Image 1 (tube, rainbow, N blue to C red):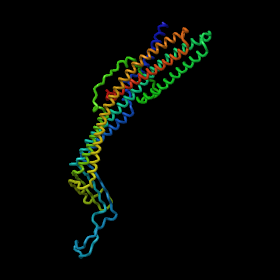
Image 2 (image 1 turned 135 degrees about the vertical axis):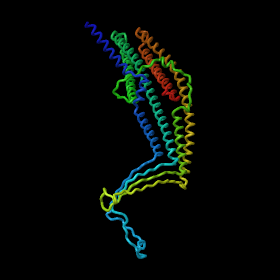
Image 3 (image 1 turned 45 degrees about the vertical axis):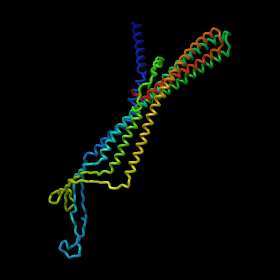
Image 4 (image 1 turned 180 degrees about the horizontal axis):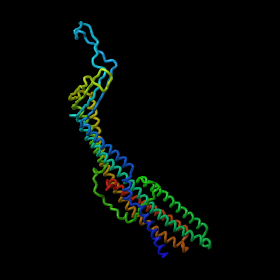
Length: 445
């Protein structure tokens, strides 16, 4: 029974360990999902989007009436005096009389309404705000593409370094075993101290290479966590890749439309906005018409008492009117502003054409790189497999006394070179594959 409980405990421990491992090991898709959900840059871009949405509401508000309330209270210690001709009151001609109109206390309250009837600029401002909204969406799209590219490139680098560390550890373990065997042979008088020393140097160089790779991997993990916006203290792992993934890469060029890429669509939207700005300037030649109305009540009293009015009455006042503003001459200001916008539009047309050409070139270059790197990968993979075989043969021959330690060291150096070339080919082909997706605008798909 005791043994049974121990077995259950061991199995439970393994389950916990495996569960922890599974939780900490993230696929590339999961890393991208976390990054898109937690990216600070995307949060910032979304605030810009919300700001633009608010500007659309502001543009709509210019088409709605505005209503303002007002109130005032004045008490004059000395009522203003006016000078009038005395003859107006039956007095002597040529003489003047001082007259005080009004009473010391005056108070009023009213409401004023203004409504735009015709203002072409208000309609253009609304269209421009909607165009800016599309531009914000494209900026978010661009930020997502950049984030996915950086996450993927970092993930691939970690996978590649993991592969390099595994291979280097295998070499280091083999060298350690051979070093121990040579030390035993030295004690038996079958090997020299030089043989031992040269193997020690080889062992230490291999160990230094592994440590350097681990340091590089740690930095890439820190970058991955930064891009995902998770704590640097979090423990995560990437999924190791296999050679089968690389062997299955499709080399044919996929369908591609240079005008569907985000960078081109951003130029198109900027052109739309510039067109609207030009139109808004030209609409400055048109008149504007607005309606206004007011309703107010006034009260008066002979002393400072806000709660009393003469005759206990409020006296109403109201009006309604139209305001027409017609531009006559602005010193040709709008004319030259329109010219500036015309040149901006021509410049955007050139940028659009350049972007299409650049997009096509990027796809062609990325396709050529992928094809070239795939051929290089296959060659380096064969060379690496062959170098491993040679190294295994030399190691066996050295242990049987058929070759010198220098032959082993030379073979180990060749193996290290083949291994480095193989690792470089791996990262190059994965980077080329990523660059092709970026060039085709398919990072999000």
